Length: 212
Image (tube, rainbow, N blue to C red; front, side, top):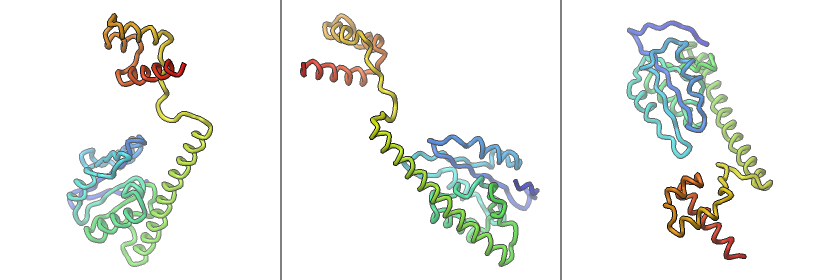
């Protein structure tokens, strides 16, 4: 890990952390920022759902970043979802905004090193390779997940939350409820179902009776 010291009067040091709500690995990224002694108020964190890619913390951070500032990220794929997005954000921050970026997991990607033409050339090549690898790995993961789901369904494996079965006295509870002897709240308490599940199991019960 890079352990360089900084002059905070000349430039600000920030950290950016991004995780999806499906993968809870922000602690590892936050720990890396803590080892670099980056103040918590200068570490921006986004949790992105699988349905979208809005990054309010990143947008707020981008507005603060100025020429000479240093931004730490744990890995290159924190900058974007795919090859093009990573390349675009890197270009905007380093070329247009004059911000330095240091990738903790890849010391070669530290724009403070090699400001000459050769250093920039090497960094650009490494960036392109890593961006491509990051995108390819995400695509491979999605493919493996899809194949696993398909194979599981072919085997008859139920995916998702386990189905909650009715209690053995469900028919009797339903009769008591239908006769008005117990309230729906009492029926739910006895079955342990939520209301939507109760009515779903009730519908299934009635369908079975009709088929007999």
